[in-house]
Length: 198
Ligand code: MD3
Ligand code: FE
Image (cartoon, rainbow, N blue to C red; front, side):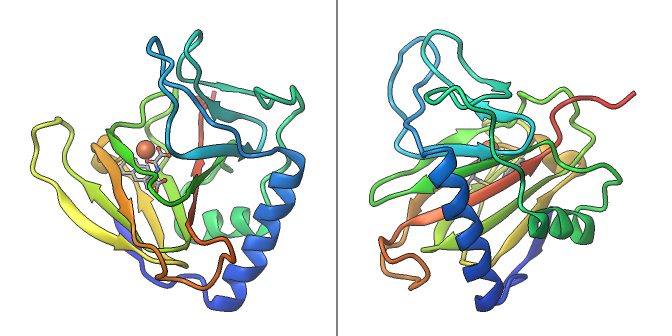
């Protein structure tokens, strides 16, 4: 697990935010629902890239090529994110999915593992924009002790190797900790490989 605090300066953060706004104009944030229960998640989501992560009551967690509401293909991953992947991920193949999470007021994400990908060898890269998120990461079992990090706007995280399957979540977002978003809240972008090569 490698933490790059303030990897993006304020200028780069606002350019990236512009790219995210453009993606959301094409592929609106929607409210995902949990498998089986159909309980809505508090985080709203959309994606960029050839594949996007989605969930709903009927079909559960999966990757698909189209937006679940509009039926349109996901917009492309912004070149600056592909450049960031090349700079810090240390993986010789590009990401296939960029999940865009938006945390408004009371949104959070419970402790979970990311295991909907066929390839766990590739790292996962996360970029935070906007208000600070309280991030919790543990080990590969739900009982392992956890560590807390404050993920601030412009921070980048790379999860590779053993940490790729660590349990993690967002306890809460601290309102008023960033001026980047006029509406407040937090965006997290997660770049992932989904399919196995070869
Ligand atoms: C640690 N998102 O979308 S990103 C998710 O801030 C997710 O929105 C959180 O967890 C967020 O699945 C955390 C940082 C992250 C991503 C993948 C990981 C941390 C990780 C995979 C393994 C361990
Ligand atoms: Fe996750």
